[in-house]
Image (cartoon, rainbow, N blue to C red; front, side, top):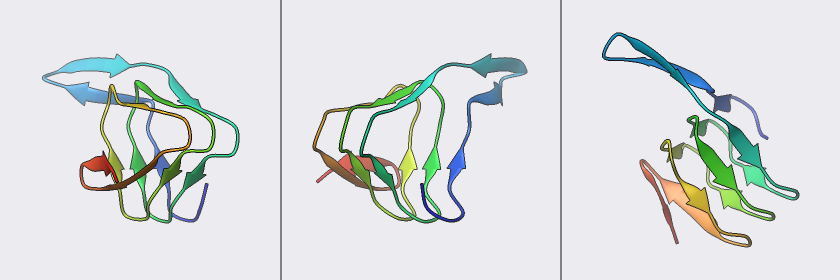
Length: 74
């Protein structure tokens, strides 16, 4: 987990408080200034690029690389 990363386990949506798990596997890398929303699962050895936004509900397969806003597998 690099500098300026935000890992947010909750939000206020349409006046309702929502939260969910965040699972980050072994050997994962989260780039500088990335934003990780709640309800995600990163399996082992996933790389999330800098300045990326990982939307809620995403499941990132092991050994994959993701980048962008919203983050997509590359």
